[in-house]
Image (cartoon, rainbow, N blue to C red):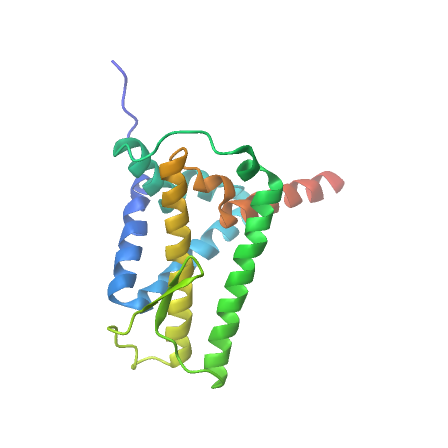
Length: 197
């Protein structure tokens, strides 16, 4: 008889990921909570934890694993070789960071009064969906603008993760996830600095 591994609290972080996406649909200001998913992996990596966030704590990776394995939504095929290459991974990271910087710039323009708040969710950086049923009048427009932009990025990356989960292995997104690429890059740099000292 195979002994089942005892579950830890972090084995249920997929619930936090799913809850975040659902809450954002009802109130866009919950999008700010996604900053935790940006800050924590970098802090863990910078403090010597390497890719522990990706391997242990990533709720999105857990959700994709659950959907792909338990619910059998994955074809369970190997990803194409080019998608596993450093060129693709770092290229996607540059593209992703560019989109993030554009989102920050749009937020700044609203903050500076040069642009008005645009209450839209942009999916896959292309399709704009009006999202005007949420009352954001009780916060500064730039706070709401950041939330719309950031939720667009989080929703888009989740959609990409689900598509690659369906087409390939469940956690295929993890291969080219920008956060995973950054934490791996930080780990490599820290190792090189340590070797040179």
